[in-house]
Length: 292
Image 1: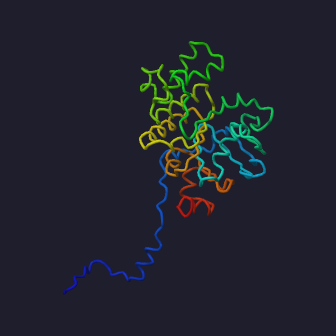
Image 2: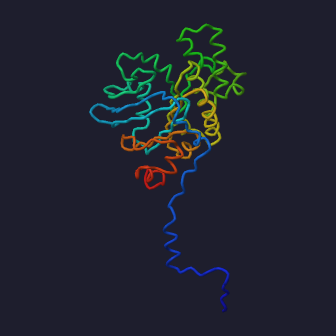
Image 3: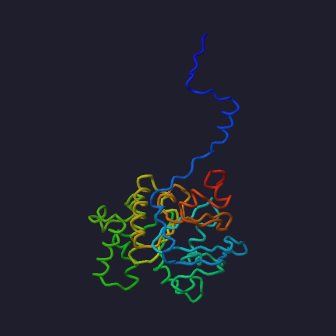
């Protein structure tokens, strides 16, 4: 049998071909979106975290974390499970205080005041720094009352509450879906709608910072897309910190990214730099899929 050879293409030795295959990266790089290129390192620092340690009893969970959180920018926190991302996030509005025998050491300065100071008004702090959890947690109340709850605690008038409820639902991009069913139970909404309702509830008390702890992990891709689009809209007015296991999500919505490993902040940089030009080997290994 005759073998046809294409003389226009040079023959490549088998050894060289194998070497070329071996040189190819094992996993593709994370694709960074245009949103990540809008990082503004000259923006004001909203929260300056300095040398923070955290303990569950005698077990240390965070080690000497220092991190600037820039105003009206999205900061994503990535890293493997159990690395301290969510623990760190909860230190920023003192949610860890609800866990017995925990202790935070260090500083997180918000407008000149240390969040961790024992004299801090925690109720006021949680109004200024709102939080959205991993799984939607609407109250077993009507859609209206879910949003109105925090406003009633603040002593707002009936008219102020009505205006704020509608504004918050509009900001959370869910008003058109619920405006004709405000008196029905929030538990009847879909998972994605419930999460946007929880975002609206957080926005109703006019926070300055919004913490989001894996807000899309329990959602389908369509609902996830809506939450991501919402984040990109909200960052014009709010400082947002999001914990995510999805590196593609971090690359889509954030301007800055911090990589946690074993309770330590290994690297923090503009998102485009961290994903495309990581300075630490641990960061490069994680984003290339070598572990995690």
